[in-house]
Length: 406
Ligand code: ADP
Image 1 (cartoon, protein in one colour):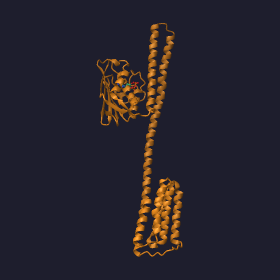
Image 2 (cartoon, rainbow, N blue to C red):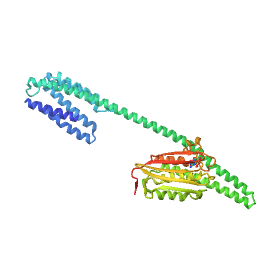
Image 3 (tube, protein in one colour):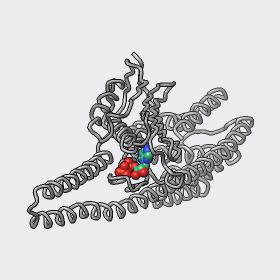
Image 4 (tube, protein in one colour):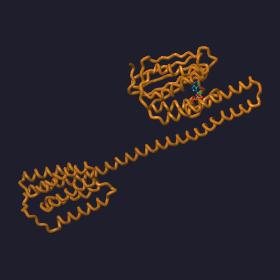
């Protein structure tokens, strides 16, 4: 609108000067100067005032033009876009301003053409000047009407798209909330069950131990209690890991991956049967990964831990192969074992919360769930290939921005 007012002002001033018509120059001065004032007001956040000043100045200029120019000049056509403009510029919430402005436009039109105004100067514009004015006033009236209607349609389309986006967002949030709710239900059920059952067996074992005099039997009970406490401790650790994974923000750190893998294997060596397994590590010694260390700790300790836990002790040459590669903007870690493998019917469910795929599991069934959540937080993916009786192959693929081999 500012641009329009400025252009019209300059354009008409030029035509008038070329035709030696001088009486309307003050009107053009208003049209040229107001946009600057309006822009200044808009910039200093006086939005409605900025827009209204421009509209009022343009209306005043139109009024004086319609009073000074003969009817044939066609200035009256400009009143039509004026009525639409206020609706396009000032929003629906302030519609009383729009209606008041419309009334003012109507009143000004009435005054200009039916009031008895005498101007203090002579107006005798040449005939060709009137013809040019008529054409330009028509073009301005039609052009600005189209502009305003187009602006309104665009505004409508924009708010429609915004609404659709918000609806989509809401649907995504809703399904995430539903998933969270289901998980919470399962969580409460499993936590209460898994926390209580070792306690009940410990209580039973202490009752038995109270009436036992044989030291050999007593030792057996103590070992059993110890096993239950260890399992309970593991379970609590996994719950803490789960909640930390959900709440703690991602942190970007440098991870020397070769040393990182070794460190994890060392930490898991105490697991039963681990020392009979041959670890084959294929990770570049100088591979530095820029990522969240805590999430990778969760991923590696669960995947390597499972590869150890679910080894087939009947097999002679047991191995776990760990391979890490950086290709393009993806970092891939593959962990392969020749352990027990996963039966086909369990493969889809092993990443579910509290899912145990075998009776041999002494864990909580949380490990792979936490792992897949950690991978998701790194915007990556995790997949499993496994053949029951032969072994499993887990592959984690994560996009990385600043990783580098140095
Ligand atoms: P948990 O080990 O506590 O049972 P996880 O979520 O870590 O829970 O694993 C879910 C299930 O997936 C396990 O119970 C097991 O049946 C199966 N599983 C995971 N990793 C392996 C593996 N490397 N080899 C065979 N089975 C596996």
